[in-house]
Length: 124
Image (cartoon, rainbow, N blue to C red; front, side, top):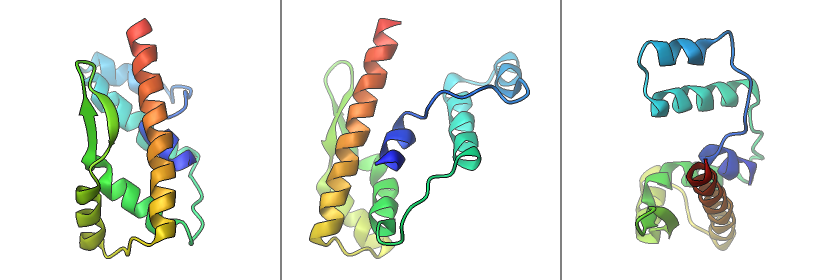
């Protein structure tokens, strides 16, 4: 579940040699800075994925554009499973009962973190 949680809401980390400050000074958007920080986190503290879980992790990452949002706040509601099925077919992953159960567990973890992040942002 760490992959799902940290993919959508990476943990806080120290600024490396002021790079993010330089990015801000040079006009990088908050989204660009966040993407940089996420990529840095993945290289500094890689997530270990057991080979039995690799298909589910790959499907989750490949399907993330299928996450649906609703309401004025645009909070996530869940994945469009027909889109997930299409992604699985395109990348050659068979959706077994185990893969689907694990995918739904990752979905719940990711949605929980996205909702928590939205609440933190609205309170700041």
